[in-house]
Length: 409
Ligand SMILES: [Zn+2]
Image (cartoon, rainbow, N blue to C red):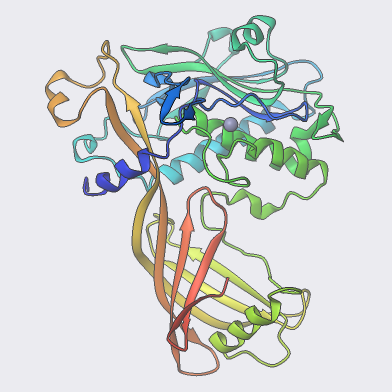
């Protein structure tokens, strides 16, 4: 399994340094202070930056089946959501990460399950019990804000307040701030977290929890762990344009939306569809629907069904099915965990198997699955490939037409 690590090494080059504090979604309309290390390049001479990452990217929790205590604190007037609704959203977010990390390949020497991500049991306790994680709806305290030392305002922030360098366990808060008056110049309703059945909260919770697992800001705008993700979610909530499908940021989207191309490029795309699926003359829309093997939807087999329809609301007809299996799997992001000098988590005798101070810990992956379409209307089969990257939401579908690989979705 460790053969994947060479590829992972290359990926490291793309990792940017962040602080242990990650604020997501500026409320002031200006960009939040970038947590990315600033390095200046000036004729080969470099200055600034160089902060040591050390343990700032370490996941807060490592042990399998470890019980992690958390609490929910709702300051008066901070949200209309009930604590139970918040708890359910938090549980859904932890489930999401558990499933995502199930695809991660760990180095051989970790396959004894000592280190697992996302497999802890979160147990809700009272905030008076000083739990490992506090989910707060309310402002930062003055002390916290001062420690943060940033003038930016945050819609949500993940704040690690302490790190046990012996046990390699972090402690801290995820704070959702109320009364967002302004996101990029748009007046915001006070309680955006309850928007669209708390879908906005779910998406922000998943993003923030990603930081707890050690994932920094990464990816392009619109991707789950991108710096502007929470801000973008809030803007969509404001415009009531969040979609149920937005829940599927890392996993393959299942239902899929009908695509009815219009305008630039529509004719080219539609002619490819017509050719690929031997479609009827009056089709206008196509929908791709995936069903995944329950045990592992990222690595397992998937079934793809393709439907056509004459309009966005017309009845759909199945035109093709395809069974897909994994064809390639490579890291898109690999975390490196700092093994502290004081740590007692990894036995000393295992040290020769990794190279302190850093340990490659887990990855997020780009996955491709291949198969062939079986068409409803003729016996011809057509090869296809589906490409998907965890966190990117979008997937692409390619097939072969006239001996050329073309993109059809
Ligand atoms: Zn963030």
